[in-house]
Length: 141
Image 1 (tube, helix red, strand yellow):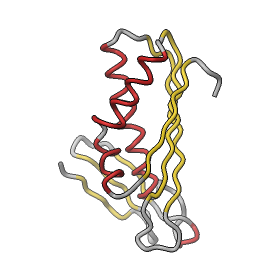
Image 2 (cartoon, one colour):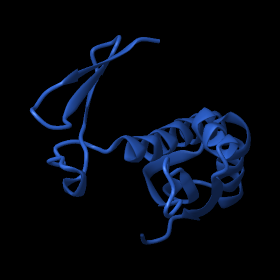
Image 3 (cartoon, one colour):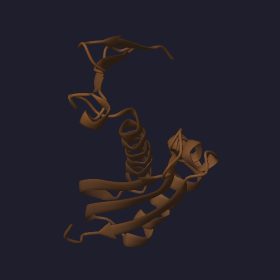
């Protein structure tokens, strides 16, 4: 898998491109001299976690003939304080699903993704991140 990054400004802005031409902008925060015209690399890791688990969950629920009308994932993470590098210490994911979905099937799909299938979750776990999650079906966010 080839990913290419190209610097796009005079500071810390980059644009990453995959082999299919999909692009993502990255930047540093203003406290570090960036302009925040892109996601920070550590934020992208959490976005990857959401995408990885979301794809798994949709796949599992589709196979179980569950009708997903809406799906939102909220991720809140805390990094280690006073360390360099500062890794993700605790990450909590909230999965909000709406549709004709049996709550038990949704909970099982999330469990399978987070504990077995999602490579990003396993990568974070192996770095020492404590992952927790909740599942809400047909509840107001």
